[in-house]
Length: 220
Image 1: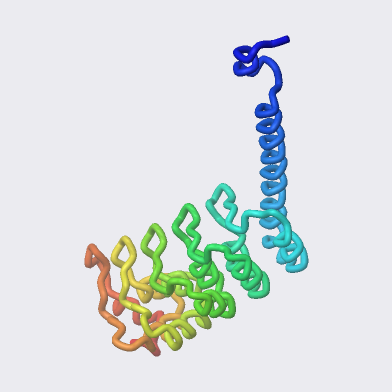
Image 2: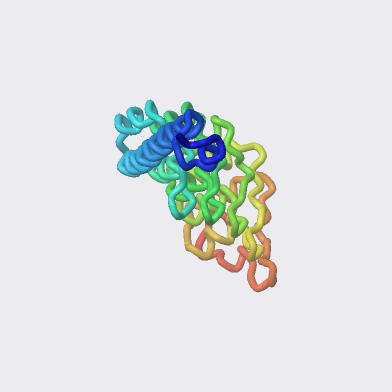
């Protein structure tokens, strides 16, 4: 018979060791199940499969799990403009302020890809309209760069705290981004924002928005 010293060194199984081993095995199985469900959730959201999303959310799953770009399921839902799935994820207590490796939040993604309804849902859920990404792009800039007139118009009309003159890391404003890209509809929409600065210059003072008048006659 083994003595207590040998048992304490783990040379023979004891009730404590057995219990610990079982708990570890159960934990490992649970983690494996969660990781599998995390993958299934990402795939379902990417494919816009609302029924599959609802099914996975009933299982053990990390609703804020990230891929190698740091994106969570709510990022994919926002980039695809699927408000049904966005609302499911919000009800599942996802982090609507989750940031990917570029500092992009779900609200940024929705604006970038021109999904006005998704933008509305996220804002109504409390998403931060003043958040910026790693390049200091604002929500308005995200909408402007994608030539998303509907999103820019909505933000100009609905978001009282919207700062149309905010600058990115180069000193460019949303109006600069729209002018450089040659988006006259977006330029006109931004110009409807009260007290917008039409003669803003970038950090190097190399050019003004007014220098691009041919892109936005309604504005200038």
